[in-house]
Length: 548
Image (cartoon, rainbow, N blue to C red; front, side, top):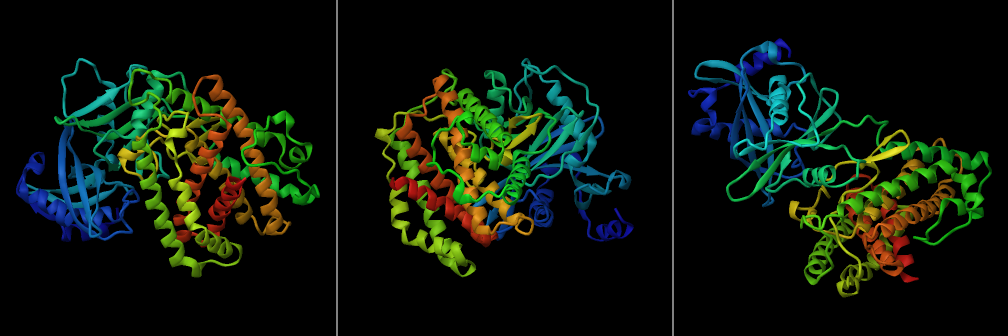
């Protein structure tokens, strides 16, 4: 930290009469911390999700104290209230340090302050190694014989206790803060929190301790707050560190760039490629040679492997007959009402967004947007046409936000991660049991995005015209789906996971794909209008298939 920065901090420091160890028992500190100090700090944080809304006030709703031999730390739960009449909760671990030498360049300094005449700095404690070590040691020291406490540090029985060696920031995250411990574990500190166990913690722990599915970063331990009324808040999740070569999104873009780069050199025309229907199942050995020549065998082998891991995940999530949180369940009227209300609200929001942003669109995107608005009654009726009495399949817990970016690639295999669920959904909605095919639809939309992203991002390097690339991309998309469907459906049915049969599978995929594509519309119109063509083409394709 520069001398100028330190000097400026000292000019504006906050003085409190209490000792640091009694800070959150002092009304003056709590009031000043929440009304004056926090706002400037959180507005600058990457994990703060309220930047597009107007902050009204911040309130400290709870705190707890943990101490090492060197320092006292507080876990602080805050409620951020917005003028738009909603609120968000966040977790900030808080430290007070007095030595300037302890403040590193990367340290997240909240404010200068003095407690009972002792000058120093309020710091986000995750940036203090002593705090990180304390959390690690408490997780590793867990014993089932420990007395019940409000702050629950837990270690899985599948993991042997380890001594602390090192900790460092993982980097690259937006919504959480992850620490790598001993080059062996990853501790994810949840910044935005919910009054409930986090789905990521619930599912990862379940899959690690109660299933045979191993293609996840295994559960190591966690930090939860447990309240007398039975409520639980998940603050942190520790998992095994998986050595990897990056996520499947990056991998797929690299593979698809090779595929499209070969169109000209191989003199392939989209019109010469054999087309198939959406959702047609296609074993790899029966893919037409023209398609293999176009896309190569490796791409389809990887799609098949990803389908296998997806199927195994769903089989595991639907395998428990004792734990009601993971027992498969049938469709019913309550679920149908919940689903329709949720989707109609989202759909109307997207219709409004399109109507307000038509001026940003041109060419095919504009024509497809007009077609979407012309058919909005049909799409709305499709969402309302969910007749649960005809559903013979079962609902289970699912990933909920499944796409290529949630998959790690390692030695020709895949590992699935980040089970927090759909960001726009409430914590309760993320735990609702849904058709496993919703995850499949999420991955299919991700395939579609990868194809179009490759075309858009390499327009100056790819010789065929954009329309030719789009036409070839749509055919490739159908074959990727076909290969995925063959492996996925065969695997889940052989393991007695009830996803329905052909007619029901196709209805659910249409339904879920349409939901996903409509969901995507809002983001693209607000952020990347040129890319709006991707969800709009997806919607057009689904509506065309639905009419058959």
